[in-house]
Amino acid sequence: MTATADALRDLHTLHQRAKAVRDRLLSGPKTLTVRQAALVARQADLEKTRKALQDAKLGLSKNEHALQASQAKIDDLKVKLNLVKKNEEYKALQNQIAHDKAAMGKYEDLILQTYETIEAQAAELAKVEAEVKQFAQDVDKLQKDLETQAVSQTAQLAEIETTIISAEDSIPIDQREQYRRVVRQLGADALAAVEGGACIGCYTSVTAQMLNELINRDALTFCKSCGRLLYLADNEAESSRASGAPKGKAKR
Ligand SMILES: [Zn+2]
Image 1 (cartoon, rainbow, N blue to C red):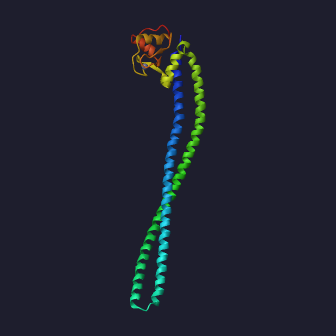
Image 2 (cartoon, rainbow, N blue to C red; image 1 turned 180 degrees about the vertical axis):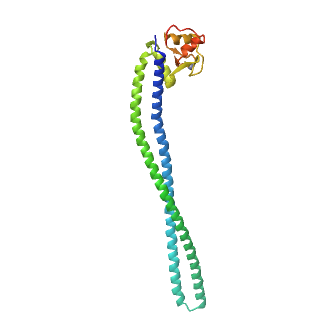
Image 3 (tube, rainbow, N blue to C red; image 1 turned 90 degrees about the vertical axis):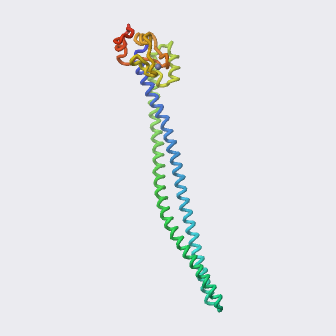
């Protein structure tokens, strides 16, 4: 006689638990990679914001120098204005001064605008800096948490795998290779319950002969359609008998 339905159901549950732990072990690093990439993108945004502020400050200093230069030029022209004798020269200098004063006005407007821009950009920079700092801390914490979780998950997985190995003792030696092949192919889906006369892995009906095998447990039964190792669901033997399915000589 081979493994009971309960033993196979337990083995199935163990495979599913192992898969769930393996999935968590794999999904952690994936999540981390996505968050790290998002952080890199945000850091690039921060650099752009910083560069924009730097450029605005450079522009401001350029306009301030131009303003000073215009002022110096006007001062110079005013000195010359006091020295000229000819009316034409006097008028020409006056025009030049008017022209430079207009230029000064333009620079002053530009400087005022740039001050406003710089103020807005500095506020934006402070905001982005704080966000990126928080983000970096979150990613760092996620990484540490995942590392801690991975240690306990790895230990948990090893424990389940050990339990699976002892549970596999109930698999008859002459059918172990077939069982292992299905596990390699289907992993946690290598086993399936038979419910309502069908394999619930692929919903193909099992034959009367297979149902008999499942009840008698002379050997393991594999689904002819999907290859899964089958076991009877709770009450399946009773309901199969009640519905006129083959009679079993052994109890489950
Ligand atoms: Zn099947």
